Length: 98
Image (cartoon, rainbow, N blue to C red):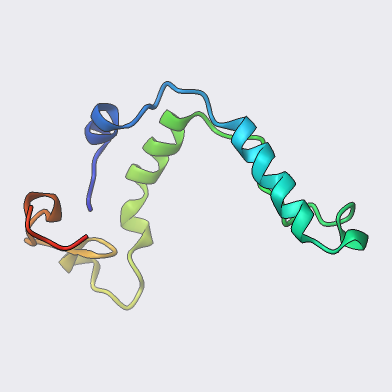
């Protein structure tokens, strides 16, 4: 999409605290799906409860998007991994299928 920091400020809730309660509920669901003998030992299957502030995460994602362009794609022809230089912004096409 080639979104920038300003778009995140306008459209995301960057001051909202990370959803730790939601992460804990998901971890409980994951643990229930594991075999009983593995539940105590397998912490790698669980989501981290040590979250970054949303603004910091957004800024990191926006500032590193050029690094996620695959090596087989010419970087001078792509803005992001899926958006070519000179292509129209997909948000402007209201008739596209979603």
